[in-house]
Image 1 (tube, rainbow, N blue to C red):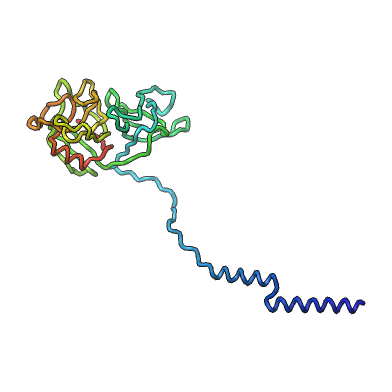
Image 2: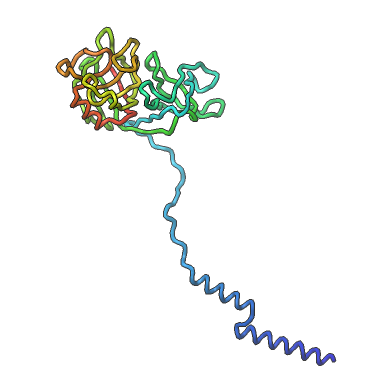
Length: 263
């Protein structure tokens, strides 16, 4: 009996060995197919984009940032909710366009919130305020700068520090002066097109302490004129007037958000 059992085990071992040798074993079948499938696969392609480490943005003295009011908010005197409110900012400017703000800088307040320093379009001119970063929209940038010289009655547009446009202009009279300071061009408008305003006009964040000839009143516009013979000179109620061909040329060169210096 013992010898018969040993013989049976030996026969079973021979059969199993034969099956594995001829490729009918289950383990060999799986291994063979897996090897063939892997050989058929192509190597993965090289990544199309390689993300590097984050780097700080470089400073560019010709580039300025601006944004718009995304949700109604208060501008504070300091980057803290407990500080005085210097202005209440709406989403829309008086002309019905987005309410544009020049961005001067950012700071994390003591409350660990991020604040943005902006020029506020209120009197007195030159008012600066702080708004929570969640209130304004994304930042935009420009590399232009418009300068109005009230003594020389001259408007000059710079791009990256070089003059690309210059023309004679009309400014406010002594009774209705064009205010001096740092402002921004916040809108380009064609719906005011008329003989008086010319084919195109620009709204700005400059405010006058007296009524101007701008349709919304109190703000300074840059527009054409139906009396070009009066230019250059002190001829307006505070707005800046250009001859129609000049305002059209300026419109082709100057984007919204351009800083405006009136001196």
